[in-house]
Length: 181
Image (tube, rainbow, N blue to C red; front, side, top):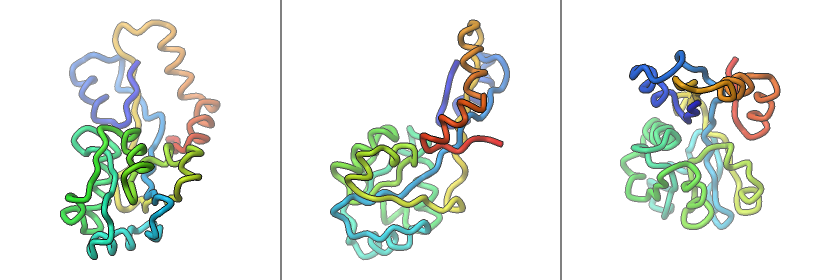
């Protein structure tokens, strides 16, 4: 079984005939703007104050996942592009190889971060800052897809089926993920 934070990787596996079927979306990710406790940046879902801080050179560092290696980085780049500040933001970026590393940067070396809601829900973030969900119109939905690989046994099939169950959906929701209809 293969679980991915995006759909692209699963689609590539399907194209290579390595899977049993096309897979299913098991969760939907949400992007948030996190502000470190020392920052005076105002949180707004349209990224207006972030844009202002970047344009006026008040922001020193913005953490995002690397768009070349991480799905949440792609979504952060989309949001920054849609508000017209991607080029201005690039010199300020502290890029994590993945969303988890980006979250670490959000707590250590960045004034703000564009990161997954699922990570912002962790108690340490409540103690060290605040966040707001980024407006959905600023980035394409981030569908997390899973697929059974050829050769997967009965246990993989059972787990695959469990992850689509109402109980699993409640678990995903409690950890900050949306679930497919």
